[in-house]
Amino acid sequence: MEVSDVSHAFAWEGDGKAVLCNISFTVAEGELVCLLGRSGCGKSTLLNILAGFFVPTSGRCLLQGKPISGPGPDRCVVFQEDALFPWLTLRENIAFALKSGDLSGKKPVGEVDRFLDLVGLDGYGDYLPREISGGMKQRVALARVLIRSPRILLMDEPFGALDAQSREASQELLQDLWRQRAQTILFVTHDVQEAVTLADRVLIFGQDSGTIQEELVIALERPRDRASELFQAYCRRLRQGLR
Image 1 (cartoon, rainbow, N blue to C red):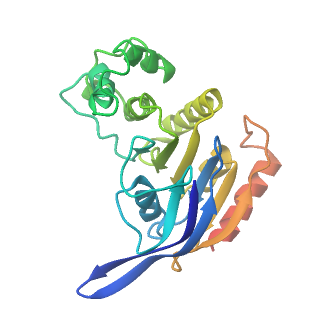
Image 2 (cartoon, rainbow, N blue to C red; image 1 turned 45 degrees about the horizontal axis):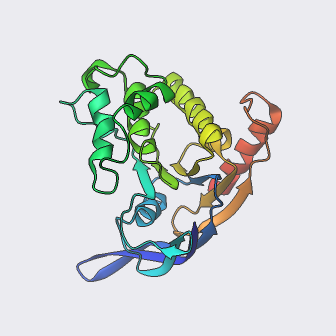
């Protein structure tokens, strides 16, 4: 993925409020990159542009050399809210992803159970969303996008509403899936520890400027030890970058 000189402004009553200014970066295939910044810095707006939900005011976004001009099956988004259908079972929620025109009939329904197992929910297929925890719901949401085999996974603070234990378990699951599938992931977060835990690289957004202030490569072996001095040193470095 290539992002070149992307700027974006929202217009209210004729006045434009710039939320992104000349953003440029690339994401290599199989890379896990975190967009780190405080609330309101523009990182979620950028993710919506890459998903094809917004058209940038200027600049261009390319995926495999082709312009991103709208939503497509090559990109899938996981939001903080799981967006499951409450009247459908977990199995039916995941199977719903196969009903779109581009995938209908291409994958057997039996694939659903394989993806339930992949996210650690084997045996939960007949449960309704209200019968499981928030962390488990996010696993279902993750399975629902992975079954579509996207080229890039766009994740907008997907674990932000979870308790600490569920968040850590979800981060571990995501890393396992990333290693198994060599999945390209762009992950939005405001949590410094989450960024150091997950990322190959971290792009640090400025608070008010709508720009990427700094890029930091996280040169730590996986799995990462949060208690190690080097891990904490990366956390301190990112906190400095956010000031």
